[in-house]
Image (cartoon, rainbow, N blue to C red; front, side, top):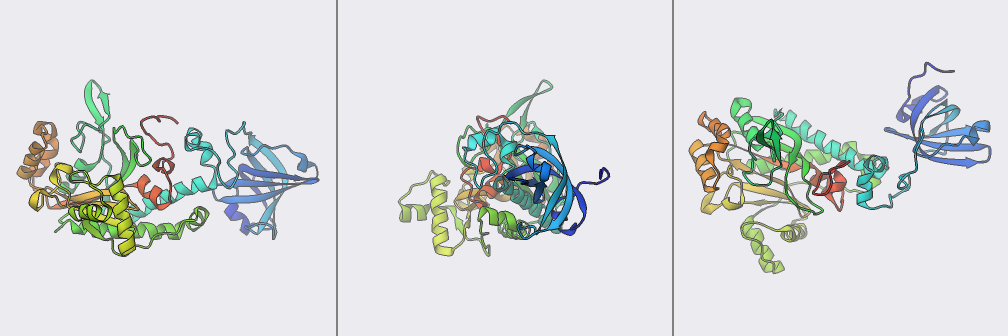
Amino acid sequence: MHTNLKRTLTKECINKVGEMVKVQGWVKKIRHLGNISFIVLRERTGELQCVLEGKLAGVIIETESVIEVIGKIVPTNNTVLGVELLIKSVKVINKNDLLPFEVNKKEVNTGLENLLNHRVLSLRHEKIASIFKIKATLEEAFREYLINMDFIRIFTPKIVSQGAEGGANVFNLNYFGKDAFLAQSPQFYKQMMVASGLEYVFEIGPVFRAEEHNSSRHLNEYISLDLEMAFIEEYEELMELETQVIKFMFEKVKEKNENELKLLNIEMPTITNIPKLKLHEAREILKNRFKKEMPEGDLNTEGEKLIATYIKETTGSEFVFITEYPKENRPMYAMPAENGLTKSFDLLFRGLEITSGGQRIHEYEMLVESFREKGLNVENFQNYLNTFKYGVPPHGGFAIGLERLTAKLLGLTNVREASAFPRDINRLTP
């Protein structure tokens, strides 16, 4: 009976009134009311109420089982969709086992560790799934904006011979008897691709940091939204570009994820111009207004949060650029400015650093000297450094941590919530 029917999605059912359809998905809820039962079937495009009558009403089906139902779409005033399905036949494709927690209530009442241990199941909850739909839109919008600006997407190695930051926080691995590392950043390759003549490049991919943090803001693997651009005049151009990129990303989320935002009760921030503070100005504010001393040449976690509070109160902005970090606190490729500072910046969003960026050194001798000042062996980086012998234009770029941006935008308490399968110092599975 109706063996030739192809699968119909929930969103398509509103245009199928009076037709026989085949619908497949998960059982979200089932209610038995005497000679009639109601199944709420869930799949990727929404939920559909399905009605079982007569003998079919007694069918025993566990929630979260995967089923196939065939029946007729009829109009109703009892569902948001405005239609329901009168079931003629039902088949259990795969039954459910005992659930470790209930996923079909308004909230999931279990701890984060349990959610992550049973990640596939927790992602079936509509609020949790919404996080990743919005995250996907943020990535899509970043890519779309840059492609429209003539940026070219690049794909760089994640197995490398040296860490891009020159530090010790790298994961080592045996590469056919040689020492290799997981890439901390695509930084060197971004610059090399700029130097190749592509000029405007971007990459979206994982980066790896072997930092033994166990905090709500750190991951050992995360997705980095990176870009690099040539022929810049000053590093302020990069901050202006990032402002426009984030503005576009947020507009795209408002446009595409209205339902998810409503479900999570999120009001999107309005972005006009993002305020800028020089690092020494931020440190003075923290000292004079909040009586807080910061570590030399940087802001700590508390300092970032307090500066965010100050900027919100004085300008209304939830973002702030912190600029002109000292050379000793920036990587060796950072372009020097006056007084031992660099043409660099961080972007804070609601008190959390989500971006690091700036202008890069483009002259060979200056770059070599910077490597030596950092105590690095120039020979170990010669493949990268040789690039700068062949004519490299002034350039710069930045990188946005996608999980941090998503977590802060959605008010999540832990960045792990914005990673489907997070990697931290304790978690290597699932």
